[in-house]
Structures are given as C-alpha cells and as structure tokens.
Image (tube, rainbow, N blue to C red; front, top):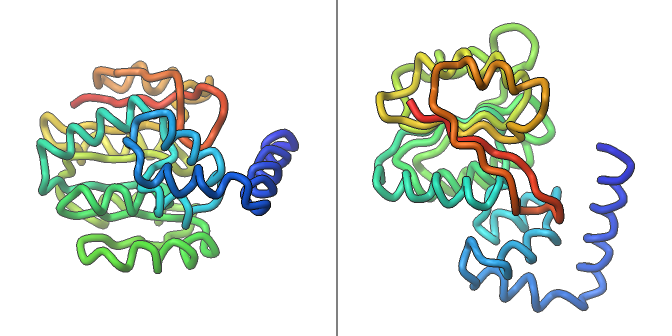
Amino acid sequence: MSTMKRAYVGAMRGVLNTGNLAWLEQSGREAEPFGWKRWAASLLAIHDVKRMVELDLPWWNVAATREVETFLAVHPNARVFEYGAGASSAWLAARSGELVSVEHDAGWHVLISPLIGTFSNAVVWHRDLAGEGYIGAIGEAGGLFDLIVIDGRRRVECLARAIPHLKPGGIILFDDSGRKRYRADIERCGLREQHYFGRSYCVPYPDHTSVLHG
C-alpha cells in the first residue's frame, strides 16, 4: 500500500473511531446504494471488509456496480465466478444463484470465509498464486458462468482463462481497468468494453472499472 493510501486509511479510521461520523455510517446503510450518502459512508470503510459487507457494497466504480446489479436482477439464478474475494463476495452471493470465489492470500481467506459462510450458495477457495492453482480455479469449478469478476492478482492471465468459461450474453467485470498494464489485453480480448470512470466506493477520487460483454 502506498504511503498516501496508508495515510488516508489511517485518517478515515481515526475519524470513525472518534464517533463524530458514526451517524453517517448508520444512515449510509439505509441510504440508496448508488447515492452520495452510501458512497460517503463507504469512505469510512476502506480496507475494513466487515463494514463494507454491512454497507452491502463492493469496492468498484459506482456506475459499473449499478450495471452489474441490473444484470443480476435480470438473471436471478446467475452462476458467478470471482477472482479475488472480499466484500464483493458477499454482495455477489446475495444477488446470484451460485458464487465460486478464489483468493490467493491465506490470511485474507481466513478473514473472508466466515463472512461468506452465511450464504449457502457461495464458496471461497484458497489457492496458491504460483502455478495453475489460482488462475486455473475457474476450470476447476467447471462449466460456464453468467458473470465473472476479475479483481485479484494475475488479472491479464485470469482474463484469458475466463473468456472460454463465459456464457453467451454473459459479462466480465474487470476492476481497476484503467491501469496501463491491463489496457492492451482488455482492448484485444474480443469482448465489447463498457469502461466506467468516476465515483467509486471507498475512495475519494474517481477510479476505473470495465464491464466486458460476451
């Protein structure tokens, strides 16, 4: 984590711990999910997965999140695969028929698993990042998926593995898609990209998320 981001995280947690903005966190849980109040509450929850789960938010661009929620509402029994577990795993499990998520960090997996364990339709696997375990987990899950989320490590390789497992008419959410190291592979992957840049949960600056349409 960069020095600037570390300072920001510390500042947000310090503000929350004073209790002065506890009202914002509480009202944010009851606010419209794509509105400014819920977004503002998410700023206090950066790197706090339990608070993000309570807010029922993923750490993505707000407009891209709205598109995915609309897609899942039309596909209530959607089969979902996720590279990189987190608060998004709970958000996805609550809106889909089945979720398989894979996480490379053992400590993070231990933290996430109880939060996802309350959903009978979801599993979170731990697989080593090296070798085939992590990127190949989608093949281990087998079959085709309505939605695939790429929000962990080795994202370019994950994208290549994901495409053959995408159902016709399915979508891939690729987070942080504005990073230079991802752009060429996204642009030549053969899927139609809807690139979102703007207000994003947890951070005070605009950020990128792309939805790739099969």
